[in-house]
Amino acid sequence: MAAGGAGGIPLLLLLVLVVPVPGVLPQGAAERRCFCQVTGYLDDCTCDVETIDAFNNYKLFPRLNQLLESDYFRYYKVNLKKPCPFWDDNSHCGMRDCAVQPCPSDEVPDGIRSGSYKYSEEANNRDGECEEAERLGAVDDSLSTETREAVLQWTRHDDSSESFCEADDIYSPDAEYVDLLLNPERYTGYKGPDAWKIWNSIYEENCFKPQNVKRPLASGRGDDGGHTFYKWLKGVCVEKRAFYRLISGLHASINIHLSARYLLQDTWSEKRWGPNVTEFQQRFDEVLTRGEGPRRLKNLYFLYLIELRALSKVLPFFERPGFQLYTGNESQDAEMKDLLLEILHLAKSFPLHFDENSFFAGNKKEAAKLKEEFRLHFKNISKIMDCVGCFKCRLWGKLQTQGLGTALKILFSENLIEKMPESGPSYGFQLTRQEIVALFNAFGRVSTSVKELENFRNILQNMR
Image (cartoon, rainbow, N blue to C red; front, side):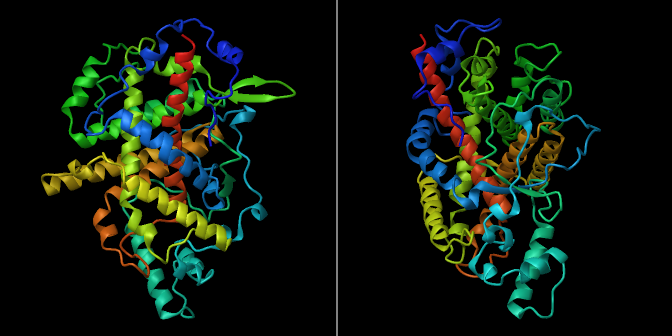
């Protein structure tokens, strides 16, 4: 997982990291400027920042890190060669840190490569028959009646599933397994017009925002300090406001990762990554961002609450005796399922969960229409990830949007989850291995961001 804590970093290195540069204020009250507003209760929530910090940093984060280092969660299958569906763009980041190293097939555990598409004991015991039948869209007469019915149910579910993401075809010859631990998310040098174009498309075309309302700090545009934008945001329904805050929170989380794992030294003998305080300030300092930085950080906490709530809601799916984290290593699989359930029970125990019942309430017809708009807008954002020119950024962008999309799918499937039988296939609600890996790794990234904020806060305090 992402490194970048203050512990063990020599004071001299910290001094190097925070030497003032043009446009960056001297330290002094830097910690206060970045974090003074990131406290207390969050908008649209009953939870406060301090409760999240204590829960995440000292209870959940260590356990989650251990889980994500296991074989089941470290291998993610992704197609990084899909063309951008929105504009002609052959420009790719030529920097070496943008590259992604896929796994040779023999390094991926057999159970992951040959296991069933749906992860359950019943499915895995059928070896590859059910998998092949589903892939070809056929129901082979040689399969048992039970297996044929399961295939038909799964296919019907997948065809009608209200997915929030444009998922990769894992059977495509261009789809490859990637070891996430060997391809960590960190600063790659990918920035400038190409990166700006991605985020501009997300915010301007997919966040329900009218064109005449300019978002704060939009490049090359007049800005009234965000007054018009936040007046508009306050006036829209809670669902549209939440959509913007989720995207802003995801953006903030990614920027924290890049600041926490910054390339500090690049010589023939050594590459060293660690926290870059100047980079962090440029993105989150209240003065340097004209008040936007603290808002971005509070949106990160909002994102955390949404994904944590999804984990608490999906517990029954993973509690079923037939479900297993199948890699082929029986003892490790059982150990990791126990750890997974421990994490989910811990998530459920969180005292101040976000109340998603405020979403899509009221008139059923209007609510259904809004929910569909919400789903399609987010699905569009997942497609934009195929336009990211840096392959490592594309990898983590696709994973984190799929993870958030899976969290939204869970929150909007509560009734189906409650109706699941304790044994046998759960026809009403399914998660693929891809969705499971994305869900937990995406939350792992947000959890890491919250932890990294504590590290940056400590560094800034020590530099006074």
